[in-house]
Image 1: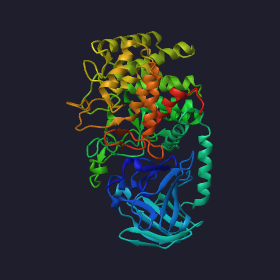
Image 2: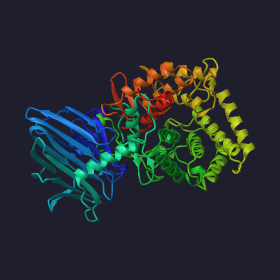
Image 3: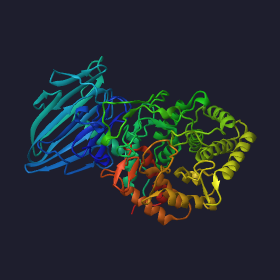
Image 4: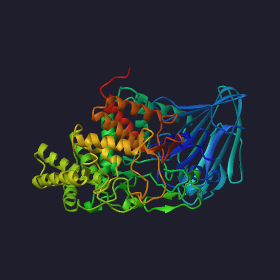
Amino acid sequence: MHPRIEDYALIGDEQTAALVGTDGSVDWLCLPRFDSGACFARLLGDEDNGHWRIAPQGEEGACTRRAYRPDTLVLDTEWETAGGAIRVTDLMPQRDRAPDVVRIVEGLRGRVTVRSVLRLRFDYGWVIPWMRRVDGHRVAIAGPDSVWFRSEPEVPTWGEDFTTYSEFTVAEGESVAFVLTWHPSHESRPPLVDPFEALRVSVDDWRDWAARCRYGGPHRDAVVRSLITLKALTYAPTGGIAAALTTSLPEELGGVRNWDYRYCWLRDSTLTLGALLAAGYEDEAEAWRNWLLRAVAGDPADLQIMYGLAGERRLPESDLPWLSGYGGSTPVRIGNGAVDQLQLDVYGEVMDSLSLARTAGMSPKPHMWSLQCALMNWLSENWRQPDEGLWEVRGGRRQFVHSKVMVWVAADRAVRALEEYPKLKGDLEGWRALRDEVHREVCEKGYDPRRNTFTQYYGSADLDSALLLIPRVGFLPPDDPRIVGTVDAVRDELGHSGLVRRYSTDGAPVDGLPGDEGAFLACSFWLADALHMTGRREEARELFERLVGLANDVGLLAEEYDPVAGRHLGNFPQAFSHIGLVNTALALFGGEEAG
């Protein structure tokens, strides 16, 4: 039986991260990057696919309590037993050369016998490594991967059934630290990390970083936790932000809506940039902007909806048949075939992001405007094409209204740049004409006057939660009756126990997939934003309070939520959900101080 998705907590080093369950088991860890093969893949299979559990001997269930140390990514998990109490502190120190997982067991009361079970399985639980002893370490090697495992002080360790076991007793005030270190198997062992010093430095570093947050309104802890989560999902060498830590956590238990989210999506770019800038994290915002510029450089016709952590373009999708899937949800996928889709909205996202960066006073890049001009020239010739839309549907291209609205955004930001910065040169009259033409067409073909709502695509009666973004991007003012009607219609028709779904999956779903999915948390935050913008501030705050309450016990949100079963769904933790939380908090309470 799999733990619930919300039973996991995140630790990471800004190049990769691990999920630790309430039972003390690390069930997901990809090394050395977020998108590398997992050496612990129990999350998507079973214990034989790799995990590392530390818990009191004989304790099979969940811990007594757990929490992050305030304003850090250091996790404390505690167990109360008949013989005493222990704390396991989990962290991944900021990386020097190699990734390390540090787990420190501390006696709090009495005497407790503790058991560690380490089952390494490289390549997503497929490859059993060769284990040997070297200078007091256990060393696991298979192909390109090598892991060194040690304890301080050294405790009894033995191997059995391709698994490494440790058993020891801690009394009050005693500590035992375990360190697991990965490196390429053809290289020598990296320098040893001091686990206790790593803990001290990690706590100080995270608290210094969190203290930079400018937000001082209600739910500041939730906002800071969301920002820490975004920082943890950042691939520090490039500034790219992964959409989530995981692949193939299902949008419907037992279903096929299982995708790999360990990449960087352009659809997130403007919202991410806005959240980081407004919260006071200019360096991270600039690193994201610079990643964006590098990733999209090239022929505008080749602009992708997502890229790898360093801007890689080829992300071929394949299945892992040896993994049984989370809760039996198959297939388990790596890579993402949606990378080859046409999504016109990303042109708007890129133009909007670079406009925001320019307005915020980020250091100028000499090629930035020439890139924007190239994007606009391509878009001017190709904007009439149908596309797959921001939800990456696999049921065929359509004239999605949100995509066309984002074409308008691209033209609008280009026109504004020329009007506000006279030194820039471009096709001002042509882009103004494009902006006017797109606006006119969307209002004619993408609006249903009988129901007073914009629709999912031209000629459709269906709705889409992305329509909630129309007032946010400035296409129409929030008090326009068509906007108020659209917000009401989306809430009524896509509402799911007070939250909202992305779109309808009933009948012949636009995404071309069987089954259903939960309420989409980012869209539910968008609804709160739209309610606030249309003057219904009390309703907006009530919805925000509810959404914050859906976070798990350590403040993390998945992609979706099932209000009926009361559990998280989809990949976890989800950057889009946490970006939504930060932006909505800033919109609703940005001018307030915590009371």
